[in-house]
Image 1 (tube, rainbow, N blue to C red):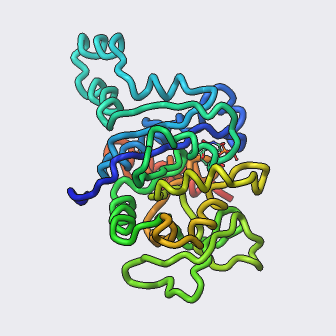
Image 2 (image 1 turned 45 degrees about the vertical axis):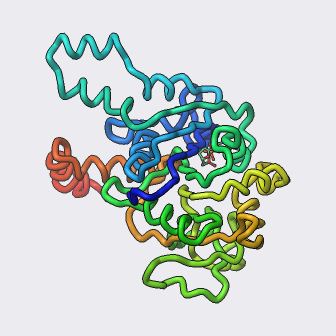
Image 3 (image 1 turned 180 degrees about the vertical axis):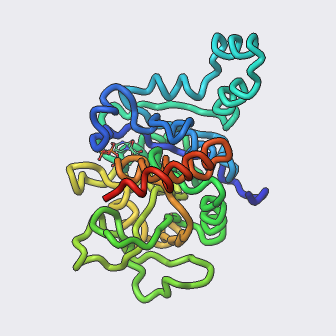
Length: 302
Ligand code: UTP
């Protein structure tokens, strides 16, 4: 990351009900579902850490204990692994505790992503900050947050990440106006945002993915944002208002177009794809998994 970046704080909303993953998420947050052998949220925190975001505020709900325990030391387990001389497993257990300074705040009621972000107001204060959705991460070999942080520092306002998609009605979508969305630097000024539009009404095929670098003026906007789609306070609605405000008031929104690989672990099919993709690329599991898929699984498909 750029050593001049002043952005160190990340808010990670992880208080959603995770209804698409019931019953697995009845007593456990979906962010703790394992992607191979690390919970999804650990990939998210590590992604932030790589971009210099080492002050992390998790927005949690009723089932927060598993997350707190995961990012904390585990003295009994660590002592047992040490006694066995299993340094590899010990290292894997300790990895999650070195990713940053992690704080927690409860959302109380799952009133939407916008409301979850607003719960971070006191911790964040008056400085730009990142928001990383806890059930969604980009490929560990890529870096999306650093360019987003750089765009925010250079242009002010807020920055969102977008990807080209086919199924716009499942996402928030940006209106780029007449801007060239294939610009080489991948930065597009945003005129407006629409939450889950019907395909025929969508202003573009650029869908908002779970990474944001926000101006702190977003908090005042969220406080005034009425419940929108699904009766939830939508971050998209507040960003739509910020896009129309002048820069002096913290307004202006730019989108960074991401063309790499992204994994969504909040949805069953995408989750399974994420696990298979990442496992098939691992040195320890990949060769066996790939030959099983190729020689036994795929030939058996009808
Ligand atoms: P989602 O809309 O994917 O989460 O929110 P959800 O509501 O838990 O999903 P389903 O549809 O019921 O399965 C994206 C992110 O925002 C967080 C979620 O935990 C997820 O990381 N979120 C959402 C909150 O923290 N609070 C909320 O009120 C809503």
